Length: 223
Image 1 (cartoon, rainbow, N blue to C red):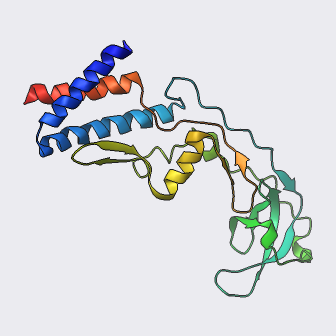
Image 2 (cartoon, one colour; image 1 turned 90 degrees about the vertical axis):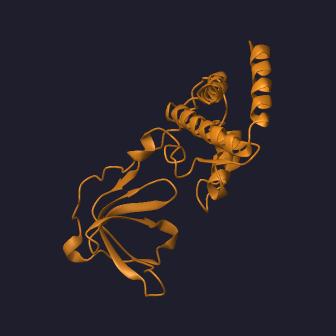
Image 3 (cartoon, helix red, strand yellow; image 1 turned 90 degrees about the horizontal axis):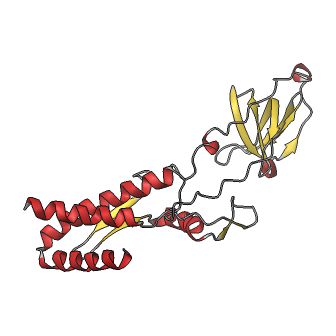
């Protein structure tokens, strides 16, 4: 079967080379779109090109919830003086991140622990003022991995006179490459590098190749 497919692919290549530059671009542009759709569907299904499932993301340890309130000085935006932050309740997440209800902002905010300038006594009126347990805001993290990377914003296509491509560019390509090849990388700027499981975001399958050949023959039959 593989040998038969290779012969067909060679024939398809010969047909493409016999076409004008404009016709080749037209066909390959459609091929690129079809292949991009296939890649997105496979990534959404969390499958490797060979059909096996992506290794699941490691579950995170539950955050530690603070009782009562906390008060500290934290750098303001720009070059302004540190502002006083009073939090009704807070959680310690991974990466030394403090998340809680910022009374001044009137909303839940996150602060990097190492940036806290100074811890202050909690004002009397806020002492023992528990805000209840904060729900971990991790809904997006529990969804299918690489949903954003698989979007048309990041998964690009390109065509020239001789070929077409489907892939990532710029900084996104570096991130995707770590997962594609199972490399080591830092999960955050100050964290230690850790190994990531190999999850092939890009890769062709026999079904992909069959579909690309169908696109070519459909185009030629319509000429």
